[in-house]
Length: 124
Image 1 (cartoon, one colour):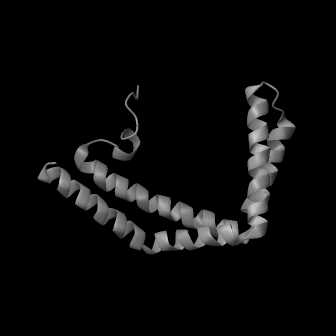
Image 2 (cartoon, one colour; image 1 turned 60 degrees about the vertical axis):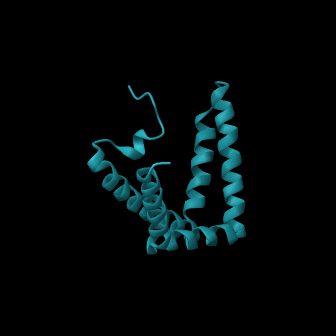
Image 3 (cartoon, one colour; image 1 turned 45 degrees about the vertical axis):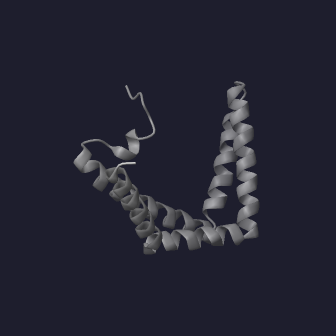
């Protein structure tokens, strides 16, 4: 392995550690843990996922209805209205914002959207 590759891996680890130490990441992890520990939130997440899956199956079979979509949206609204979930979604959005800044910083000298291009081969 070349020393350049080794250095890039070191920088990658340092970046990961810096992200893990960032207050917004810590807030995200705390909010995530709070949602995971909240029985009511977990029940609503399960109900939402079940309704969403049922709707997706119906859509794939050409049997989706507006009423089915409204049920999924209503359950999502109910879930997102919970204070613990609101806090989680806010923390998640803030962390995504920070990661987008990191992506831009990495992408700028490369003249490519590294985060958007790294996973794909064929973007027409």
